[in-house]
Length: 189
Image (tube, rainbow, N blue to C red):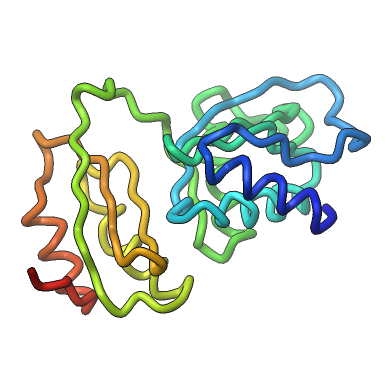
């Protein structure tokens, strides 16, 4: 994938527009179907570019679109070719294994969020010391694994960890406690 295409994907994704990561001339997998899943590791807009590169290097799987605002991506592949013998309930796990392995654990695949936007609460936590992508990943990893966190972002540019949570399962205090536990300094008022 060329640099111009990655720039366009990043720009579209930053504004919440689903980006088409594959070159128009790219050969699509024969047959197959599309699957939309939640993607962990989309903690800042340029991570959509990283996902596009990763999937572009994975034979038989095409990244159709990325919805950064919902932490979701749509993949297209022929199950029989890419995951021979997989039963329908094994597809997500097989894709998760490929993505997690190929990204060295920085991306993962989960089922889509089943909660409506009205059931999700947005929590923003000001943090300091996030000066690189790795630091943002560390802050993101601290919160996204908490039961009840449906999606999250972490930005060193604005010093903010944002989580969309199921308030029946977690809350701001639990998120802050986990960040402190992982040595992510919270910005004091």
